[in-house]
Amino acid sequence: MARATDRSDWGDRPNRADRAAVRPGAPRAAARAGSRGTSRLAPLPVPHSIGVDIGGTKVAAGVVDGEGRIVERRLAATPSHSPLAVEDTIESVVADLRSRHQVETVGIGAAGWVDTDQSVVRFSPHLAWRQEPLKARLEQRIDLPLIVDNDANAAAWAEYRFGAGAGASVMVCITLGTGIGGGLVLNGQLFRGSYGMAGEWGHMITVPGGHLCECGNHGCWEQYASGNALVRDARALVATGSPVVQGLVEAVGGPDQITGPAITEAAVAGEPLARELLADIGHSLGIGIANLAAALDPELVVVGGGVSAAGELLLAPTRETFERTLTGRGFRPQARIELARFRNDAGLIGAADLARHSLIEPPRVIGGFWPRRRRARRERTRREPGTLRQVAGQVAAKRSRSSG
Image 1 (cartoon, rainbow, N blue to C red):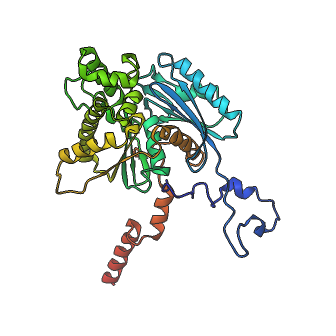
Image 2: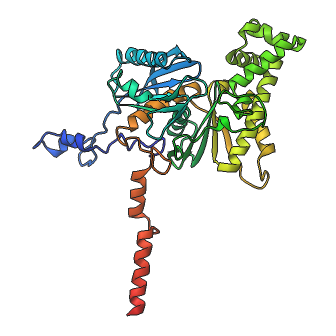
């Protein structure tokens, strides 16, 4: 797949159908663009696509153009205990957006583990999906080309294509919301693993025997560095009756109003306990990122999701802990840790773009990757002097000369 700024997949290089659309016998120049003598065909318009991001608490949908811009968006609550109700919600928001926009594809970013065919949600810790054939069921309701992908994969793709990760050789994306999701882009290719389930950073066990996670294990990373962890810790302090929580309770409007966004807003406004709670989340986040850096050695770590709205109140303690915990610190280059450009919108933007890309390269995971950079590899094989084919030819020529 091309870089984020590369429009070659949708730009001036027409496909067979586009070439066939030129009338037989029409002057060839009629299909040209630009001034006299220009040999390039006119760029084709990039079709709009609908992206739907299904999180643990909300469904976000939007019409996205070819530059990653959201033309219109819709929000709805996620009916987390009923797969059928989730499908009803998706169908409703897609139909509403289609009533006002011409779109050609629909991409679904699902908060769960999606198989390599990108059709079945194998499991979701926060929703009622268990071996859910989501793509097949939605295709019965929506008459457009449609793909299903993991929501964090979609977010990673959006940040690589259009956002903070543009041009990074190895980019780790971390989404902080109800839990922790993640994605990995290697040299322009989204890595999915052998079974389509790579990037589930949130379920690395960082505290053995720790808090029980919705996945069934104890001590998962997301139990210490997510929106749920932020709220759980705040409510636990309120339950103690400690006077230190009074300022936070007043800032959010009462003990029943303690939510992740409310705590973040209080922290931004300067409430001391809210800032301390976010720093604790940042500390746990930094430890996990150091573990990922030891395994993957990324150039860039992009942090997005709802909790990232805290900005530097979250990232400053994250970077501090990361630098203090990183293996080989002081003797190795360190990954940059940056805020995602699209924050909560990354999932729907990426899902829309992946759906659009599926018209060019139908989803098929090979070697753990999709999308892949097939065209770039072919071009390198033709032009680089060090390819195996050319080296083999050079060796054969030398042997022929020496034997002669």
